Amino acid sequence: MTAKKKRKKKGSVLTSIGILLLLAALGLTGYNLWDGLRAGQESRAIEEKIAAQMPETIVEAHEPQAMEEIDLTMPVFEIDGYKYVGVIEIPSLKISLPVMDSWDENRLKIAACLYWGNYKTDDMVICAHNYIQFFAPIRGIDMGADVYFISADGVAYHYQVTNRETLRPTAVEQMVINTVQGADGQEVKDWDLTLFTCFPGGATRCAVRCARVKSDEE
View 1 (tube, rainbow, N blue to C red):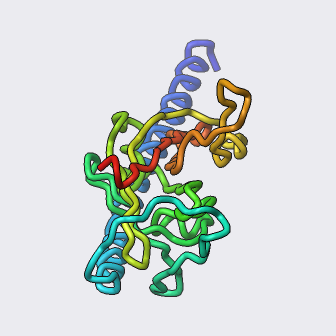
View 2: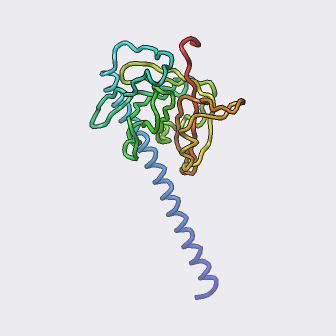
């Protein structure tokens, strides 16, 4: 085989490989779009079932109480074998998602999930896939945007976005520990709610920090 034929054959092989890689990328993109649409439809159906069980009157959350006065039990809705602690809403992004009481890979394909903490103690962390219908839009959320969590017993908790961070998947402590060192050296609470999702590729996570809006500020 001449050098010219060898180069031609090598070029054909590389072209074929390039086409196969392009087709694989298109297939993956198509699957991700389909999976996001599926998840959005499923979560909306679940939210409709939650709405049917939610108390008719939604009441505003009271001021945070002393820890010893709080019943930390979170009421839940049970739907299709899964338990939900409430609904997370971000009006400016048109996001409204049911929130499961725990997380794993299967649950994340259905709804947002409680990753850590409790809304009653102002340390809740909620995660969701970066589907367009789930938490992908929070990567560009505006500071000061309103966020609402409606608990299963019909109590509304109002938050506003105060910060947005990019964290590594291994930075678990930074994700869940919501205290910083104040000017006097004492630890002070820096946020009351965190929402997070992965950036495309999964190498980093977007963490959106929120502070509770107290009733006397509304």
